[in-house]
Image 1 (cartoon, rainbow over the protein chains, first blue to last red):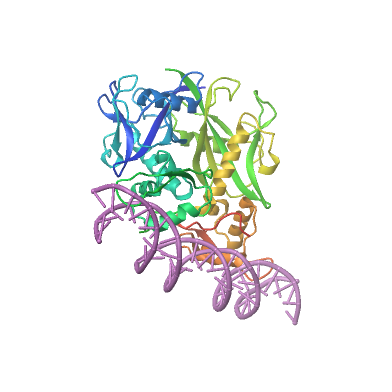
Image 2: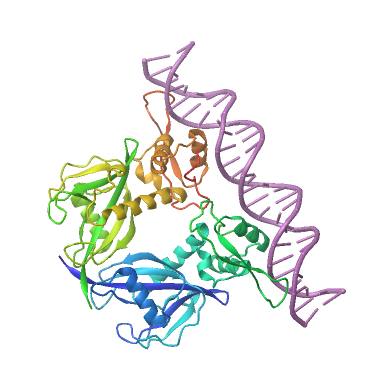
Length: 225
Length: 225
DNA sequence: TCAAAAGTGTTGAACATACACCCATGT
DNA sequence: ACATGGGTGTATGTTCAACACTTTTGA
Protein backbone atom coordinates (compact mmCIF):
# COMPACT_ATOMS: atom_id res chain seq x y z
CA UNK A 1 0.00 0.00 0.00
CA UNK A 2 1.85 3.08 -1.28
CA UNK A 3 2.06 6.18 0.86
CA UNK A 4 2.51 9.78 -0.23
CA UNK A 5 2.88 13.27 1.14
CA UNK A 6 -0.36 15.21 1.63
CA UNK A 7 -0.38 18.99 1.52
CA UNK A 8 -3.01 21.67 1.99
CA UNK A 9 -2.99 24.66 -0.34
CA UNK A 10 -5.07 27.75 0.31
CA UNK A 11 -6.94 29.96 -2.12
CA UNK A 12 -7.59 33.05 -0.03
CA UNK A 13 -9.71 35.63 -1.80
CA UNK A 14 -10.74 39.14 -0.88
CA UNK A 15 -12.15 42.24 -2.53
CA UNK A 16 -9.73 45.15 -2.33
CA UNK A 17 -9.57 48.43 -4.24
CA UNK A 18 -12.26 47.28 -6.62
CA UNK A 19 -10.44 44.10 -7.60
CA UNK A 20 -10.66 40.46 -6.63
CA UNK A 21 -7.36 39.64 -4.94
CA UNK A 22 -5.67 36.47 -3.71
CA UNK A 23 -3.20 36.08 -0.89
CA UNK A 24 0.05 35.01 -2.53
CA UNK A 25 3.45 34.17 -1.11
CA UNK A 26 6.86 34.32 -2.65
CA UNK A 27 8.72 31.03 -2.37
CA UNK A 28 12.10 31.19 -0.60
CA UNK A 29 13.01 27.55 -1.08
CA UNK A 30 13.27 25.27 -4.11
CA UNK A 31 11.47 24.06 -6.05
CA UNK A 32 10.26 27.18 -7.89
CA UNK A 33 12.41 29.37 -5.62
CA UNK A 34 11.52 33.05 -5.98
CA UNK A 35 8.30 32.51 -7.83
CA UNK A 36 4.78 33.07 -6.59
CA UNK A 37 2.58 30.39 -5.07
CA UNK A 38 -0.48 29.77 -2.96
CA UNK A 39 0.11 29.50 0.77
CA UNK A 40 0.20 25.92 2.00
CA UNK A 41 2.20 23.16 3.55
CA UNK A 42 2.29 19.53 4.50
CA UNK A 43 -0.30 17.86 6.69
CA UNK A 44 1.18 16.50 9.91
CA UNK A 45 1.03 12.90 11.05
CA UNK A 46 -2.03 13.17 13.31
CA UNK A 47 -3.53 16.38 12.03
CA UNK A 48 -6.99 16.80 10.54
CA UNK A 49 -7.02 18.35 7.05
CA UNK A 50 -9.03 21.37 8.07
CA UNK A 51 -6.82 21.88 11.12
CA UNK A 52 -3.81 21.89 8.80
CA UNK A 53 -5.49 24.54 6.67
CA UNK A 54 -6.10 26.76 9.70
CA UNK A 55 -2.57 26.21 10.96
CA UNK A 56 -1.02 27.17 7.63
CA UNK A 57 -3.30 30.16 7.42
CA UNK A 58 -2.09 31.45 10.78
CA UNK A 59 1.56 30.74 9.92
CA UNK A 60 1.47 32.45 6.55
CA UNK A 61 -0.53 35.52 7.50
CA UNK A 62 0.57 36.00 11.10
CA UNK A 63 -3.11 36.38 12.02
CA UNK A 64 -4.27 33.81 14.54
CA UNK A 65 -8.03 33.81 14.00
CA UNK A 66 -8.42 34.85 10.39
CA UNK A 67 -12.12 35.64 9.80
CA UNK A 68 -14.08 34.50 6.78
CA UNK A 69 -15.60 31.39 5.29
CA UNK A 70 -13.43 28.28 4.81
CA UNK A 71 -14.48 25.35 2.66
CA UNK A 72 -12.78 22.50 0.89
CA UNK A 73 -12.22 23.25 -2.78
CA UNK A 74 -10.84 20.04 -4.27
CA UNK A 75 -7.92 17.68 -4.32
CA UNK A 76 -5.14 17.75 -6.89
CA UNK A 77 -3.09 14.63 -7.27
CA UNK A 78 -1.45 14.29 -10.67
CA UNK A 79 1.68 12.16 -10.09
CA UNK A 80 4.02 14.78 -11.55
CA UNK A 81 2.52 17.93 -10.05
CA UNK A 82 5.43 18.41 -7.62
CA UNK A 83 9.05 17.82 -8.71
CA UNK A 84 9.94 16.64 -5.19
CA UNK A 85 7.87 13.51 -5.66
CA UNK A 86 4.31 12.39 -5.13
CA UNK A 87 2.36 15.09 -3.30
CA UNK A 88 -1.43 15.10 -3.11
CA UNK A 89 -2.72 18.58 -2.39
CA UNK A 90 -6.07 19.24 -0.74
CA UNK A 91 -7.06 22.78 -1.65
CA UNK A 92 -9.18 24.96 0.64
CA UNK A 93 -10.98 28.15 -0.28
CA UNK A 94 -11.21 31.07 2.14
CA UNK A 95 -13.44 34.04 1.42
CA UNK A 96 -12.09 36.79 3.63
CA UNK A 97 -12.48 40.50 4.34
CA UNK A 98 -9.66 42.80 3.29
CA UNK A 99 -7.21 42.65 6.20
CA UNK A 100 -3.69 44.07 6.22
CA UNK A 101 -1.19 41.20 6.08
CA UNK A 102 1.89 41.51 8.26
CA UNK A 103 4.94 41.78 6.03
CA UNK A 104 6.27 38.30 6.75
CA UNK A 105 4.74 35.18 8.19
CA UNK A 106 6.44 33.10 10.85
CA UNK A 107 8.61 31.36 8.30
CA UNK A 108 9.70 34.70 6.85
CA UNK A 109 8.01 34.29 3.49
CA UNK A 110 6.60 37.46 2.07
CA UNK A 111 2.81 37.34 1.73
CA UNK A 112 0.54 39.90 0.11
CA UNK A 113 -2.69 40.54 -1.76
CA UNK A 114 -2.40 40.42 -5.54
CA UNK A 115 -5.25 40.97 -8.03
CA UNK A 116 -6.11 37.62 -9.57
CA UNK A 117 -6.07 39.24 -12.99
CA UNK A 118 -2.31 39.90 -12.55
CA UNK A 119 -1.48 36.31 -11.66
CA UNK A 120 -1.95 34.60 -15.02
CA UNK A 121 1.17 32.63 -15.89
CA UNK A 122 3.12 33.48 -12.73
CA UNK A 123 2.24 30.73 -10.23
CA UNK A 124 4.32 27.69 -9.31
CA UNK A 125 3.19 24.05 -9.53
CA UNK A 126 -0.43 23.68 -10.68
CA UNK A 127 -1.47 26.60 -8.49
CA UNK A 128 -2.91 28.58 -11.36
CA UNK A 129 -5.44 25.84 -12.02
CA UNK A 130 -6.28 25.63 -8.32
CA UNK A 131 -6.71 29.39 -8.07
CA UNK A 132 -8.88 29.39 -11.13
CA UNK A 133 -11.12 26.70 -9.65
CA UNK A 134 -11.33 28.73 -6.45
CA UNK A 135 -12.38 31.88 -8.27
CA UNK A 136 -14.95 29.92 -10.21
CA UNK A 137 -16.31 28.39 -7.01
CA UNK A 138 -16.52 31.81 -5.37
CA UNK A 139 -18.42 33.22 -8.34
CA UNK A 140 -21.01 30.49 -8.31
CA UNK A 141 -21.38 30.51 -4.52
CA UNK A 142 -22.35 34.18 -4.55
CA UNK A 143 -25.28 33.27 -6.72
CA UNK A 144 -27.22 31.14 -4.28
CA UNK A 145 -25.75 31.80 -0.83
CA UNK A 146 -25.08 34.86 1.28
CA UNK A 147 -21.33 34.19 1.32
CA UNK A 148 -20.66 37.56 -0.23
CA UNK A 149 -20.94 38.77 3.36
CA UNK A 150 -17.77 36.78 4.18
CA UNK A 151 -15.89 39.33 2.06
CA UNK A 152 -17.11 42.22 4.24
CA UNK A 153 -16.00 43.26 7.69
CA UNK A 154 -18.98 43.38 10.02
CA UNK A 155 -20.90 45.59 10.17
CA UNK A 156 -21.17 46.60 6.54
CA UNK A 157 -23.37 48.72 4.34
CA UNK A 158 -25.47 47.39 1.50
CA UNK A 159 -23.33 49.36 -0.93
CA UNK A 160 -20.21 47.55 0.29
CA UNK A 161 -21.96 44.23 -0.14
CA UNK A 162 -23.06 45.22 -3.60
CA UNK A 163 -19.51 46.10 -4.55
CA UNK A 164 -18.48 42.54 -3.68
CA UNK A 165 -20.90 41.20 -6.26
CA UNK A 166 -19.88 43.77 -8.82
CA UNK A 167 -16.18 42.98 -8.46
CA UNK A 168 -16.47 39.20 -8.29
CA UNK A 169 -18.88 38.99 -11.19
CA UNK A 170 -17.54 41.92 -13.18
CA UNK A 171 -20.98 43.44 -13.67
CA UNK A 172 -22.83 46.55 -12.55
CA UNK A 173 -25.91 46.09 -10.41
CA UNK A 174 -28.73 48.54 -9.85
CA UNK A 175 -28.24 49.84 -6.28
CA UNK A 176 -31.96 50.25 -5.70
CA UNK A 177 -33.02 46.80 -6.82
CA UNK A 178 -30.05 45.26 -5.03
CA UNK A 179 -31.05 46.94 -1.81
CA UNK A 180 -34.59 45.67 -2.05
CA UNK A 181 -33.47 42.17 -2.90
CA UNK A 182 -31.06 41.61 -0.04
CA UNK A 183 -33.22 43.29 2.58
CA UNK A 184 -36.30 41.33 1.57
CA UNK A 185 -34.63 37.91 1.54
CA UNK A 186 -35.13 36.37 4.99
CA UNK A 187 -31.91 35.30 6.71
CA UNK A 188 -29.64 36.99 4.22
CA UNK A 189 -28.46 39.89 6.36
CA UNK A 190 -29.40 41.11 9.84
CA UNK A 191 -29.93 44.82 10.46
CA UNK A 192 -28.03 46.53 13.27
CA UNK A 193 -28.96 49.75 15.05
CA UNK A 194 -25.88 51.53 13.75
CA UNK A 195 -25.46 53.82 10.78
CA UNK A 196 -22.41 55.07 8.99
CA UNK A 197 -20.84 58.41 9.63
CA UNK A 198 -20.03 59.10 6.08
CA UNK A 199 -18.07 61.12 3.64
CA UNK A 200 -21.04 62.40 1.67
CA UNK A 201 -24.71 61.70 1.26
CA UNK A 202 -27.26 60.15 3.54
CA UNK A 203 -25.85 57.80 6.21
CA UNK A 204 -26.37 54.13 5.49
CA UNK A 205 -27.69 51.50 7.83
CA UNK A 206 -25.22 48.80 8.86
CA UNK A 207 -25.85 45.06 8.68
CA UNK A 208 -24.41 41.76 9.84
CA UNK A 209 -24.40 38.36 8.11
CA UNK A 210 -27.70 36.55 8.33
CA UNK A 211 -28.32 32.99 9.41
CA UNK A 212 -29.32 31.38 6.12
CA UNK A 213 -26.38 30.10 4.13
CA UNK A 214 -28.28 28.72 1.24
CA UNK A 215 -31.23 30.38 -0.45
CA UNK A 216 -33.21 28.56 -2.99
CA UNK A 217 -34.25 31.13 -5.49
CA UNK A 218 -30.88 32.56 -6.52
CA UNK A 219 -30.31 35.95 -5.03
CA UNK A 220 -28.95 37.45 -8.17
CA UNK A 221 -27.38 36.20 -11.30
CA UNK A 222 -24.23 37.28 -13.04
CA UNK A 223 -24.39 38.59 -16.55
CA UNK A 224 -27.20 41.09 -16.17
CA UNK A 225 -26.86 44.83 -16.00
CA UNK B 1 7.50 15.39 5.88
CA UNK B 2 4.95 12.72 6.89
CA UNK B 3 3.48 10.42 4.28
CA UNK B 4 0.16 8.61 4.33
CA UNK B 5 -1.96 6.19 2.35
CA UNK B 6 -4.35 7.75 -0.13
CA UNK B 7 -7.53 5.95 -1.16
CA UNK B 8 -10.37 6.66 -3.55
CA UNK B 9 -13.91 5.85 -2.47
CA UNK B 10 -16.82 5.87 -4.89
CA UNK B 11 -20.37 7.03 -4.38
CA UNK B 12 -22.15 5.43 -7.33
CA UNK B 13 -25.79 6.44 -7.61
CA UNK B 14 -28.57 5.31 -9.87
CA UNK B 15 -32.36 5.43 -10.04
CA UNK B 16 -33.88 1.97 -9.92
CA UNK B 17 -37.42 0.78 -9.21
CA UNK B 18 -38.46 4.25 -8.14
CA UNK B 19 -35.70 4.60 -5.54
CA UNK B 20 -32.32 6.27 -5.40
CA UNK B 21 -29.78 3.46 -5.02
CA UNK B 22 -26.07 3.26 -4.35
CA UNK B 23 -23.61 0.60 -5.43
CA UNK B 24 -22.46 -1.06 -2.21
CA UNK B 25 -19.99 -3.85 -1.56
CA UNK B 26 -19.72 -6.27 1.29
CA UNK B 27 -16.28 -6.28 2.88
CA UNK B 28 -14.49 -9.63 2.93
CA UNK B 29 -11.41 -8.48 4.81
CA UNK B 30 -10.87 -6.69 8.12
CA UNK B 31 -11.39 -4.05 9.23
CA UNK B 32 -15.20 -4.07 9.31
CA UNK B 33 -15.25 -7.56 7.78
CA UNK B 34 -18.72 -8.54 6.62
CA UNK B 35 -20.21 -5.07 6.82
CA UNK B 36 -21.23 -2.81 3.96
CA UNK B 37 -19.02 -0.15 2.44
CA UNK B 38 -18.52 2.06 -0.58
CA UNK B 39 -16.36 0.63 -3.35
CA UNK B 40 -12.83 1.96 -3.28
CA UNK B 41 -9.18 1.19 -2.84
CA UNK B 42 -5.72 2.63 -2.53
CA UNK B 43 -4.15 4.93 -5.10
CA UNK B 44 -1.05 3.45 -6.69
CA UNK B 45 2.39 5.01 -6.66
CA UNK B 46 2.23 6.74 -10.05
CA UNK B 47 -1.48 6.77 -10.63
CA UNK B 48 -3.65 9.84 -11.12
CA UNK B 49 -6.56 10.12 -8.69
CA UNK B 50 -9.22 10.00 -11.37
CA UNK B 51 -7.49 7.03 -13.01
CA UNK B 52 -7.60 5.23 -9.68
CA UNK B 53 -11.33 5.95 -9.45
CA UNK B 54 -11.94 4.49 -12.91
CA UNK B 55 -9.75 1.47 -12.14
CA UNK B 56 -11.61 0.68 -8.92
CA UNK B 57 -14.90 1.18 -10.69
CA UNK B 58 -13.98 -1.43 -13.29
CA UNK B 59 -12.63 -3.81 -10.67
CA UNK B 60 -15.64 -3.62 -8.38
CA UNK B 61 -18.36 -3.75 -11.01
CA UNK B 62 -16.71 -5.92 -13.63
CA UNK B 63 -17.80 -3.37 -16.23
CA UNK B 64 -14.90 -1.88 -18.15
CA UNK B 65 -16.37 1.37 -19.47
CA UNK B 66 -19.05 2.22 -16.93
CA UNK B 67 -21.15 5.04 -18.41
CA UNK B 68 -22.26 8.10 -16.47
CA UNK B 69 -20.89 11.30 -15.04
CA UNK B 70 -17.86 11.18 -12.71
CA UNK B 71 -16.80 14.09 -10.56
CA UNK B 72 -14.73 14.61 -7.45
CA UNK B 73 -16.87 14.86 -4.35
CA UNK B 74 -14.49 15.73 -1.53
CA UNK B 75 -11.63 14.49 0.58
CA UNK B 76 -11.98 12.92 3.99
CA UNK B 77 -8.92 12.90 6.19
CA UNK B 78 -9.71 12.69 9.90
CA UNK B 79 -6.68 10.99 11.50
CA UNK B 80 -8.77 8.20 13.05
CA UNK B 81 -11.14 7.47 10.19
CA UNK B 82 -9.45 4.14 9.39
CA UNK B 83 -8.29 1.76 12.15
CA UNK B 84 -5.39 0.58 9.99
CA UNK B 85 -3.69 3.96 10.30
CA UNK B 86 -3.68 7.27 8.51
CA UNK B 87 -5.69 7.03 5.29
CA UNK B 88 -6.82 10.07 3.36
CA UNK B 89 -9.78 9.22 1.14
CA UNK B 90 -10.62 11.17 -2.00
CA UNK B 91 -14.30 10.50 -2.74
CA UNK B 92 -15.70 10.52 -6.27
CA UNK B 93 -19.33 10.70 -7.28
CA UNK B 94 -20.68 8.77 -10.27
CA UNK B 95 -24.18 9.35 -11.57
CA UNK B 96 -24.97 6.26 -13.59
CA UNK B 97 -27.81 4.55 -15.44
CA UNK B 98 -29.29 1.42 -13.90
CA UNK B 99 -27.01 -1.37 -15.13
CA UNK B 100 -27.02 -4.95 -13.91
CA UNK B 101 -23.91 -5.57 -11.78
CA UNK B 102 -22.13 -8.89 -12.26
CA UNK B 103 -22.41 -10.88 -9.06
CA UNK B 104 -18.80 -10.43 -7.98
CA UNK B 105 -16.03 -8.10 -8.99
CA UNK B 106 -12.54 -9.28 -9.83
CA UNK B 107 -11.58 -9.43 -6.17
CA UNK B 108 -14.65 -11.53 -5.39
CA UNK B 109 -16.45 -8.98 -3.27
CA UNK B 110 -20.20 -8.98 -3.69
CA UNK B 111 -21.48 -5.72 -5.13
CA UNK B 112 -25.07 -4.63 -5.60
CA UNK B 113 -27.54 -1.74 -5.75
CA UNK B 114 -29.12 -0.83 -2.42
CA UNK B 115 -31.65 1.97 -1.85
CA UNK B 116 -29.88 4.76 0.01
CA UNK B 117 -32.81 4.92 2.42
CA UNK B 118 -31.93 1.41 3.62
CA UNK B 119 -28.29 2.22 4.30
CA UNK B 120 -28.61 4.42 7.39
CA UNK B 121 -26.40 3.08 10.13
CA UNK B 122 -24.97 0.15 8.17
CA UNK B 123 -21.84 1.47 6.48
CA UNK B 124 -18.23 0.99 7.57
CA UNK B 125 -15.70 3.77 8.28
CA UNK B 126 -17.12 7.24 7.65
CA UNK B 127 -18.82 6.04 4.49
CA UNK B 128 -22.26 7.09 5.63
CA UNK B 129 -21.14 10.71 5.78
CA UNK B 130 -19.51 10.41 2.37
CA UNK B 131 -22.62 8.85 0.87
CA UNK B 132 -24.76 11.54 2.41
CA UNK B 133 -22.57 14.26 0.91
CA UNK B 134 -22.82 12.51 -2.45
CA UNK B 135 -26.59 12.36 -2.35
CA UNK B 136 -26.71 15.99 -1.36
CA UNK B 137 -24.41 16.91 -4.24
CA UNK B 138 -26.52 14.94 -6.69
CA UNK B 139 -29.68 16.69 -5.50
CA UNK B 140 -28.27 20.13 -5.94
CA UNK B 141 -26.62 19.34 -9.28
CA UNK B 142 -29.97 18.36 -10.78
CA UNK B 143 -31.17 21.84 -10.05
CA UNK B 144 -28.90 23.76 -12.39
CA UNK B 145 -27.37 21.22 -14.77
CA UNK B 146 -28.69 18.56 -17.11
CA UNK B 147 -26.91 15.80 -15.21
CA UNK B 148 -30.19 14.05 -14.58
CA UNK B 149 -29.61 12.66 -18.06
CA UNK B 150 -26.57 10.78 -16.68
CA UNK B 151 -29.05 8.59 -14.78
CA UNK B 152 -30.81 7.56 -18.01
CA UNK B 153 -29.71 5.14 -20.68
CA UNK B 154 -29.69 6.84 -24.08
CA UNK B 155 -32.07 7.31 -25.69
CA UNK B 156 -34.68 8.11 -23.08
CA UNK B 157 -38.17 9.55 -22.89
CA UNK B 158 -39.08 12.75 -21.11
CA UNK B 159 -41.12 10.72 -18.65
CA UNK B 160 -38.06 8.68 -17.71
CA UNK B 161 -36.09 11.85 -17.20
CA UNK B 162 -38.85 13.29 -15.07
CA UNK B 163 -38.86 10.20 -12.91
CA UNK B 164 -35.20 10.83 -12.11
CA UNK B 165 -36.07 14.22 -10.69
CA UNK B 166 -39.04 12.87 -8.81
CA UNK B 167 -37.03 10.10 -7.17
CA UNK B 168 -33.94 12.12 -6.36
CA UNK B 169 -35.90 15.05 -4.98
CA UNK B 170 -38.80 13.11 -3.55
CA UNK B 171 -41.40 15.35 -5.18
CA UNK B 172 -44.03 15.03 -7.88
CA UNK B 173 -43.64 17.19 -10.95
CA UNK B 174 -46.29 18.20 -13.44
CA UNK B 175 -45.58 16.13 -16.57
CA UNK B 176 -46.82 18.85 -18.91
CA UNK B 177 -44.82 21.71 -17.44
CA UNK B 178 -41.78 19.46 -17.13
CA UNK B 179 -42.03 18.54 -20.79
CA UNK B 180 -42.22 22.15 -21.87
CA UNK B 181 -39.34 23.15 -19.63
CA UNK B 182 -36.80 20.58 -20.75
CA UNK B 183 -37.67 20.80 -24.42
CA UNK B 184 -37.51 24.59 -24.45
CA UNK B 185 -34.15 24.87 -22.67
CA UNK B 186 -31.44 25.01 -25.36
CA UNK B 187 -28.75 22.36 -24.99
CA UNK B 188 -30.56 20.41 -22.32
CA UNK B 189 -31.59 17.42 -24.40
CA UNK B 190 -31.27 16.57 -28.10
CA UNK B 191 -34.21 15.04 -29.95
CA UNK B 192 -33.73 11.82 -31.90
CA UNK B 193 -35.87 10.51 -34.73
CA UNK B 194 -36.98 7.50 -32.74
CA UNK B 195 -40.12 6.92 -30.71
CA UNK B 196 -40.98 4.32 -28.10
CA UNK B 197 -42.99 1.23 -28.86
CA UNK B 198 -44.94 1.30 -25.72
CA UNK B 199 -47.07 -0.61 -23.29
CA UNK B 200 -49.97 1.82 -23.37
CA UNK B 201 -50.76 5.30 -24.55
CA UNK B 202 -49.25 7.49 -27.19
CA UNK B 203 -45.62 6.68 -28.15
CA UNK B 204 -43.08 9.11 -26.76
CA UNK B 205 -40.25 10.77 -28.61
CA UNK B 206 -36.74 9.71 -27.56
CA UNK B 207 -33.94 12.09 -26.62
CA UNK B 208 -30.22 12.17 -25.97
CA UNK B 209 -28.22 14.30 -23.53
CA UNK B 210 -27.67 17.84 -24.74
CA UNK B 211 -24.43 19.77 -24.89
CA UNK B 212 -24.95 22.33 -22.16
CA UNK B 213 -23.86 21.11 -18.75
CA UNK B 214 -24.67 24.21 -16.81
CA UNK B 215 -27.78 26.33 -17.25
CA UNK B 216 -28.10 29.61 -15.52
CA UNK B 217 -31.72 29.88 -14.65
CA UNK B 218 -32.27 26.73 -12.61
CA UNK B 219 -34.21 24.19 -14.58
CA UNK B 220 -36.47 23.26 -11.75
CA UNK B 221 -36.38 23.48 -8.03
CA UNK B 222 -37.06 20.82 -5.44
CA UNK B 223 -39.82 21.35 -2.92
CA UNK B 224 -42.58 22.43 -5.29
CA UNK B 225 -45.47 20.27 -6.30
C1' DT C 1 -64.63 3.30 -28.24
C1' DC C 2 -62.23 3.50 -24.13
C1' DA C 3 -58.03 3.81 -21.27
C1' DA C 4 -53.59 5.53 -20.98
C1' DA C 5 -49.83 8.20 -21.78
C1' DA C 6 -47.83 12.26 -24.75
C1' DG C 7 -47.93 16.77 -25.72
C1' DT C 8 -50.11 21.99 -26.49
C1' DG C 9 -52.64 26.37 -25.15
C1' DT C 10 -54.05 29.59 -21.84
C1' DT C 11 -54.51 32.16 -17.68
C1' DG C 12 -53.59 34.52 -13.36
C1' DA C 13 -49.98 35.15 -9.95
C1' DA C 14 -45.25 36.06 -8.71
C1' DC C 15 -41.16 38.18 -9.77
C1' DA C 16 -37.62 41.08 -12.07
C1' DT C 17 -35.93 45.19 -14.43
C1' DA C 18 -35.88 49.91 -15.21
C1' DC C 19 -36.33 54.18 -13.56
C1' DA C 20 -38.96 58.32 -11.33
C1' DC C 21 -38.77 60.06 -7.11
C1' DC C 22 -38.02 61.17 -2.03
C1' DC C 23 -34.63 61.21 2.19
C1' DA C 24 -30.69 62.64 5.03
C1' DT C 25 -26.45 64.40 5.62
C1' DG C 26 -21.69 67.38 4.70
C1' DT C 27 -20.00 71.47 2.74
C1' DA D 1 -28.71 75.53 -1.46
C1' DC D 2 -26.84 71.79 -3.62
C1' DA D 3 -24.16 67.73 -4.30
C1' DT D 4 -23.92 63.02 -2.91
C1' DG D 5 -25.14 58.75 -1.82
C1' DG D 6 -29.28 55.98 0.71
C1' DG D 7 -33.62 54.22 0.10
C1' DT D 8 -38.99 53.63 -1.66
C1' DG D 9 -42.72 53.39 -5.16
C1' DT D 10 -44.41 51.81 -9.38
C1' DA D 11 -45.01 50.35 -14.28
C1' DT D 12 -43.93 47.03 -17.68
C1' DG D 13 -42.34 42.66 -19.17
C1' DT D 14 -41.08 37.84 -18.28
C1' DT D 15 -41.47 33.48 -16.13
C1' DC D 16 -44.08 29.94 -13.78
C1' DA D 17 -47.70 26.78 -11.72
C1' DA D 18 -52.05 25.08 -12.65
C1' DC D 19 -55.06 22.90 -15.47
C1' DA D 20 -58.32 22.43 -19.66
C1' DC D 21 -57.72 20.31 -23.79
C1' DT D 22 -56.01 17.73 -28.00
C1' DT D 23 -53.18 13.78 -29.95
C1' DT D 24 -51.79 8.99 -30.67
C1' DT D 25 -51.44 4.59 -29.69
C1' DG D 26 -53.04 -0.63 -27.69
C1' DA D 27 -56.73 -3.39 -26.37
